[in-house]
Length: 615
Image (tube, rainbow, N blue to C red; front, side, top):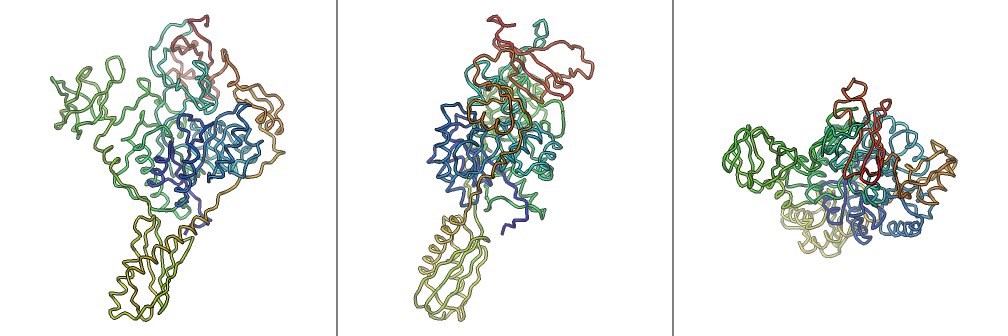
């Protein structure tokens, strides 16, 4: 039984469609986040309302909550449609709404709980405390925060704290990146990010001479905080979020299964924590996040500012490092370590120009690997496995089940048999009438009774304990016991469904002042309702949002904690050999780098097209 005095720890999983959502639930997720049909920050994976309804019904049986992301900024002509959509999502069972646009707080909405998206740049206590007072029950933190900053925010706000623990990282502060808009009409704040930060760039000096060519200078590694979960719990994090609504099914199964195991181990040895949902997940494979898509693991800035968080050579998945090539034959290479590779494994390495080259394994004999293609392989290169055929096959073939343990009691009288089932919180019972004579063989009769009632079949339950109340022991036919069991399970299903309660939205303190009185276009106010919200909370000056502008020349289009100078070893505080201005260029698009040494951060200012009259 869950005790309300314990802290509820939630594992939050990504959902791209109904099937991915069911897989995440079965593998141990406590909550799911799914994109609405429109207005989600991943427009390519919006989910239809009928699927969200079915997902809610499936998830709620395990007390798994479903959060719907409508976390883009809205244009004026979209406000009415967005409002109607929220009403429909509430009707189909959604537990909470993840939003970026403050227009939602000035709509006529149902009492759905609101979560402040990471797109709202939740990086300091002043903002997060304001969101908590403005009606948000949860704040989703910026990825680039340190553990100390997370703890300061958690201790100072009444809202629940949600933090990312795994997956891709936005190098820019969430909701403050407009780089896509400089290269195309696509906008990350409108659910259509073009991933411009993953592109190759030339690094130019102040005379526009190249210092580096065709390097992925803004592409950072992927987050993996599995070794820091307990520290984050102690810092005040409630919900642990996995990124990946665009990832495949095996990623969801593997990564959710991994973090379920890691969190369960922490919860099991502490007396102040509990899981946020119910049910035991049973996997037929051993999860390993190194086997799923990864650009290389980083803890980013959780432990403070550290170097080597980027991956200059490629934005693609490198996978597991196998070993270094020591000898090259006609159709094979020898590694410096013994490996167990299988036919069909995907391997990759960096070519002489640094570009990632991939191929497949035909076979492996000890240290000798027989690739499908030999081009580019040479002594000294590191070989990586980015596709483990046997592991992927094992995950794909595995059956998944999540079981809720029950306790029960059965009472047999001369004309009635009654079964009561309980999941520890909710109970239900069923009774059948008949003529039940004293058993001639009491032990056999009781064994039959226990065996028949324990057969839960395809239900989500497992009967762990059964108290038998019958004096004397009476004989009940197996067919009667089967009917009794089915009726009791159906009654428990109904009782548990009726007992599920959605939380509702917190009230808004209308007298609470916003932390600042002036909003720049970077705050992205794009409609009248959002403007009204800010003005009612004391904001005096509001520049139109950048997503309303066609030209962002000379505007700061990305702010970040990531610093390219620090990553290159050119920190201005450490007497670098070059101290002049720096620029990034891709396809003629030019960005000047500004370095905020006081805060140890970086900004990108868009300077236009060099081939079209720009700088």
